[in-house]
Image (cartoon, rainbow, N blue to C red; front, side, top):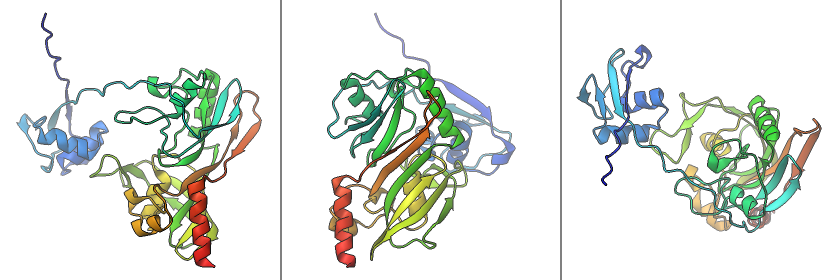
Length: 316
């Protein structure tokens, strides 16, 4: 028995007057929440029309015209694989939540294309049952850390904890502290970076400071200065993807070792770093069960300690 191919979803909508004169890829990104790269790919594949005529990514739209897009198929669902995570430490565990110290090279949860270990998979392998709230592959995940960032994150075990912790993150009452080693010496040495962050206009895997992005606020204070770099204590007011990395790079002081965002590879090699020097050192929040304030801390892992020792020796 043959199976008929699925009919593609066609999305048709009028171009808002406020997007008059925008490029097709930029307009689609604004209207449908795509990255500009994805919108450009759809246009290049002949899947975008403007008032019935196929258009390329760089053509300009007119307010009130109709744009039609053949939507890409939904991504293939990913599943959680129960697999032990070497080096992951359980810092705290109770009926409502678990706090883990995540090692570098581990993702918070499964995602398309990721074949490595995950925090969720590690907890499943250790017999932990987490909240069923959230998408199937990220159930219980309240907040995330990048694969290349180590340190503290919490996972909800109860539905109550998931709801109340997510609320605290939305209301910005959680104390998230990171230490970041950045190139050079920020001026001023303590300050606030308030700049919106959104998808990078050219690279799907990157983020950038962009006028179309979401409000993003990062506070930083100097902890220790070296000849080539500065160690900063960073408090996040918002929690955008790659926020610290993007803000510091936009401030011309990328995290040491963060080659994705323009760090000097020579300095990274000298310090034997194979990832960005960024660690979630402290996490504090109101416990969802009894309302008491709880706080957890994490020591630097070996590779980050080595880099600091080398810099102190050079600066002596």
